[in-house]
Image (tube, rainbow, N blue to C red; front, side):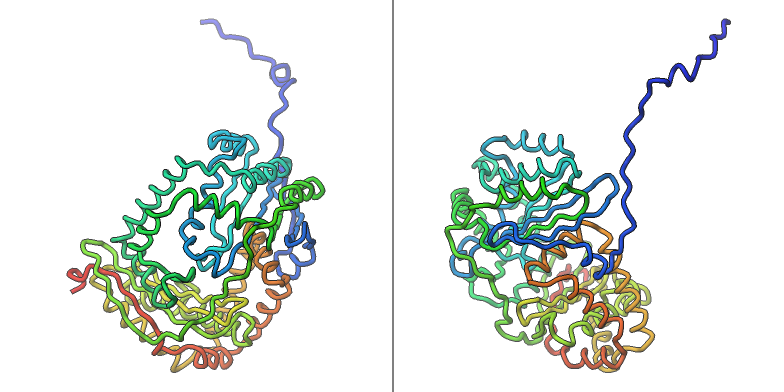
Length: 465
């Protein structure tokens, strides 16, 4: 057998150029103070404010967030369902590009563009656009976003595809314990008239509204309501500032809505009394516990940081919390358990919610144990050791969250809307770091009342018995 000669390696690779290296990021201070030192704020056009954070990122990545606020509590009546469908439909083609051509352009630019309702309460009146791409592609992606804003196709056939998908999802929710419990709790904590945009419809009412919605309503909503009444835009990462700002100005200039804008306030209509609702979900393997109460404070209240830390100790810290330790680790009753505390910035409204997923046979025990832990928190307060551990855990979570550039872009946009800077976040974190067990315990007893806890359980009642 002939053995071939060994090739000349140097000759083989002399013209090889390899792939371009991936750009590295920079060592960055993700503290509120560190971020604030690098943020530039400006007005793009009247009504549209911007926050820019230029930093070196791995692969030259950049994130852009655009929030548009529109309408008010009166002129949006009857348009809640169209407002839910409009954002995704706007991304299904423009007057210059078909749906597939639009997707192909995003692929070519190695970009993603998503849209949704920006309001955390799920209300109409805000639409959010999120972009993730590379430095060199961002100006062109903003050009695509301009087409989406001004010339969405809003085709009837795409609307029907979208509507059928939503109807199918709602049909599944009819028997889903988690969806039913969450929807029931939201309704019990938000008591508004049926024609109010803040009203939480039942799943059956959502289906009925969706069946009556037309593509013409979405076109009217886009044509008459969208514009730069109030808007925030944030860009975080590597980008050409002049080129991007020029494209953003082109997209937003001379674009005023025909309908007036006013923020939809969310005051507490009436302080809810404790109640309990049981939902039967036959033949479902999981059961859900959902509970909550409203608190008449905002995130400006002096006790806000203490309640934040109390929630972290109760269930916000997941497995390292009282609920996690007791319900899941010690008793073995739940697949997942936790709590969440949220306080509004511009309304005297906060909510404490508790959730758990378990076997239907354990739903009664889960309810009992959670009530015991809440009562123990109110009666005995928290310990110094718990406060110290929670302070470390909570502040570390915040630092990790801010290491995500998209999360920073969202946070800066929210602060712009509220007229704040990262100095507000710094103030809250300093207060949390200095709290004592006595201060946290006092805030708990002052603001949380177990008698106002609204409880919803969704389970296969036959299996539960």
